[in-house]
Amino acid sequence: MIDVEHRPPLARRTTTRHARRLAIAGITVLILLMCGWIPGVVGTAVAAALPWLGLVLLALVVIALFLARRVIVLLLVPTLLWFLAMAPAFPGLPASASAESELTIASQNVRAHSGSAAASATELAQSEADVIALTELDGDSLSAASEVLADAYPHSYTVGTVALWSRYPLASAEPLTLGLSWKRALRVEVHSPAGPVAVYVLHAASVRPGQQQDRDTMLNGIAEQVASDAATALVVVGDFNAPSTDPSLAPMRAEAKWARPTDGTLGFTWPAAFPLVRIDQVFVRGLDVVASSTRRAGNSDHLATMTRVR
Figure 1 (tube, rainbow, N blue to C red):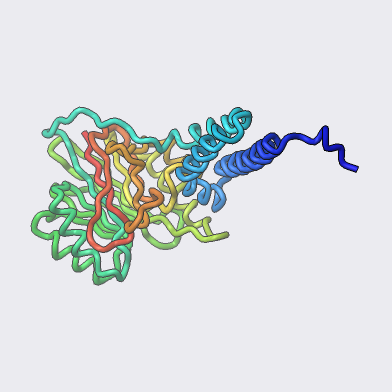
Figure 2: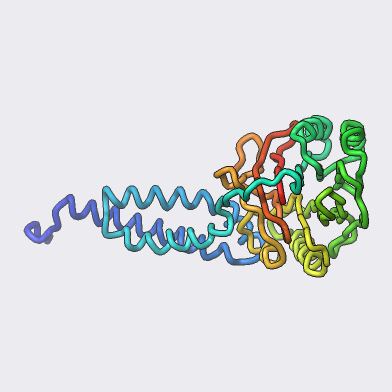
């Protein structure tokens, strides 16, 4: 028999139910955040979702303020962890400009067989970039881009599906296999008026469930190349197929500084129609990032990265 007199009021029972649900949601987010440090496809998946988990936490905190304030303390734990996890990907501030010693580098995955390379090359050239790097080129798109850029960018180097065009002379050009049997990366020295700058262009292997080893091998390989590079000024650009906070980028972050977006955004680059994640990265060493942003170019499914360094 139910003791009606000792039965909790309806409002209290409702509040308790809301608190329990919010607590479960908060713990679920906490577990997901902790999985973000797991190397491989799990860490990649969480890194891709990480910015949006922040919106989930914000919604949970707002709901808790109205329905179950006692849960807010519990939600502070995943919220703090989210800030710590996102810290490496937060926007940065631009450096002071000094036009005579600056170099602007544009990079874009133009999507093979999309017919986008010529349009991308044209629009990136109109941005007055000094160096243009394109990845995922097929034979036709390489020819189309080369034809567009030949006059303004007379110096170029191509390896497999990646290529670079420059207003300034190139030296020490070499293909990079990065631990694999095919070439999807290159290194050149751009002899800019302010001095030589080593530029790496990378198109990392794709990530699929259970098939991320090739990408991780390439990312470790590029980090090793940069670690052994004696260049005093160095830039690495391209499609890394890894979100900004992906654990697989840790070796690269240890060797060079990630170029934070300076336009107040998180610099998402994919998919171009509605960017949800940044998988096209820029790293620098021995240089100051004057400006870093993204822009639409051509009909690719990736936005281009625009990086001005000093």
